[in-house]
Length: 309
Length: 306
View 1 (cartoon, rainbow over the protein chains, first blue to last red):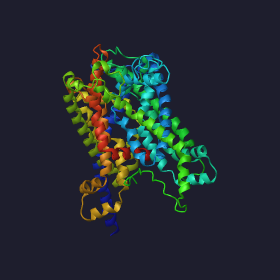
View 2: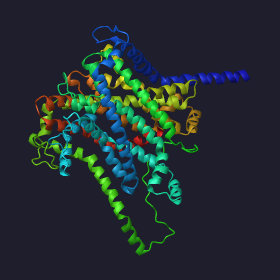
View 3: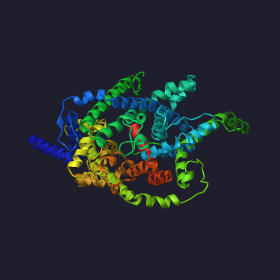
View 4: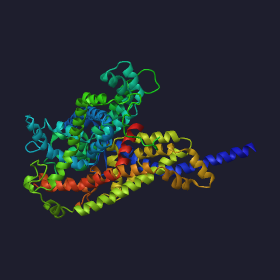
């Protein structure tokens, strides 16, 4: 009797497992073919010379040594870091400001939320084109507006000092997504916390630093990590605006982001081995930066139910 | 948790019932608050101008002749439809549109079907190693696309698919970690009793998924469809890698080719580029207005889940 029950249960469990695996099988197959094998093969390719036409030629760690010697690798890395360091804090800071304004817009909140999200629907290629046109030094709209208030605008799209700031400013155009995420987080902050702070005599600034920021710190942390990873892999807008077909006659090294250089090495110069090594360096850099953010974040993020911050 | 709307409009402040509104008081109150209120509305309107004006500028420029594209006028001085006529001769735009629609539909449908199946497998069943396997799903989201980029290209190359549209969508048949995560959360939000009852009524595993789980999670399926449709429509990197002949281009890839040809190669036709940009962007704007609520709630949800 008892063994019969265990047998039935076990049979049921086996059937459960079988059916579960059937449902999950597309992902398992995809993981093996499009993730696991590519990871392993990319690791192998990074130790070879490979141009697709000829078989990979094993060269050991040569590609990794070359990474340090190619000035463009370091340049593209610096460009990317500069862009991420500038765009991520601005992106999140302005998105937070807008979300807090939206909180007070009462019935118009929905309308403005929709309007702020519109740029996120614009294809990145079109954003790159808008960048070239709006930031044009001679007849662009940005400099026309700056001129209107008496500021002579720079040559955003040709002066290598101003190309990256221009890319940063253009990237801020699509911060509506983060604004919506932060607005949802702000709406989740319990009202009574503000009432309690008010009773304690906290001013607006104090209410912001002691109630708002801790209560949405989890969301801020999420946004910092996600936006940093995205910024480090930034490609389409800068590629559209500054890198043409052929041998890159219009290319501008000031806009050379890491993934753009990786892409060119892999698919324009067919240095697949070297590009694979570049991909692994990028992976390592992203891992290190995310780990640092994670460690710092653990200390700063306030989780409900914990004592203190 | 996600079955209830995440975002509710901020409730208007109810008048305090304890305080009967006295005419004198209600007249003085708005006066005291108005400067700050005015500032709030000015800031919101300024932000709106910054977000919307570039799109307005783009549309306006597409109705200007070549010599006026850069004049920054809101209303074209000599409005013309010539660009919208010329563009079809200047580039095989209709063909690119057809390619993009095909890729977009296949990519969105494939990823929604596969991801919902996988998500259901993780949400409903209990089996040994489930948590470890699900952790692996989440871990793949951390992997930069650059690492798998080249071997994935070599796979499609070995299959003879480079130059066709297949590599732009077929990978979606195997599910995508982000959507699996999103849909699993939805499935977990449905009370388990519903499924137990359906099973008692004789539904088998597939029927349970097809006739109970999927209909109950329709909002999440729509979010998945819309997000992936946008991703597929706007993607540039994969079309750059996989498409060779201009007859196979998607619209973003074609637009990039136009920038290279008409923007820089000495053959200045920014009015055509601007017009093609409008045509590329318009379907996304239309899709956004149709699925607005789903887009905004979908975005808000991803933040809260993280």
